[in-house]
Length: 109
Image 1: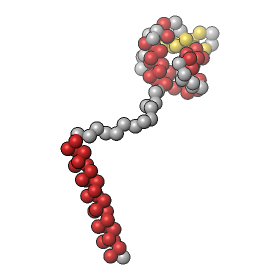
Image 2: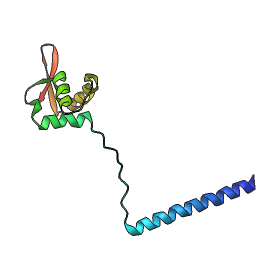
Image 3: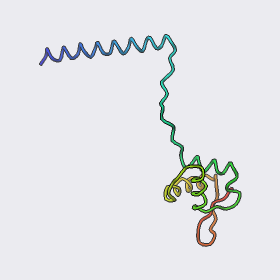
Image 4: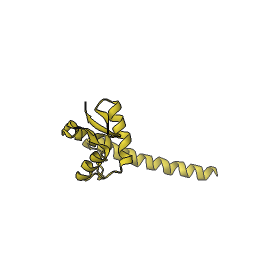
């Protein structure tokens, strides 16, 4: 058991030495971190803020209208996914809400 542990420790030490040598080489060349090929996710919160900046909320809009506008921009979300981000925007004071014909509508503050 002791011999096996000793052998494993030596192998681990060799691997660490390889890694450190690569790191030291990269430090000398000022290498940049690798970029991921994955696209970054866009949050619903930021999409709705973009709509506000475009003037979409200059008139009160229903949740369905917001959903359709995002769908026109190729962001397809169910209405249930929109409610929480929109509530957070209302609480943050980014948009306001009013009740029209028994349903909430969201507008610019």
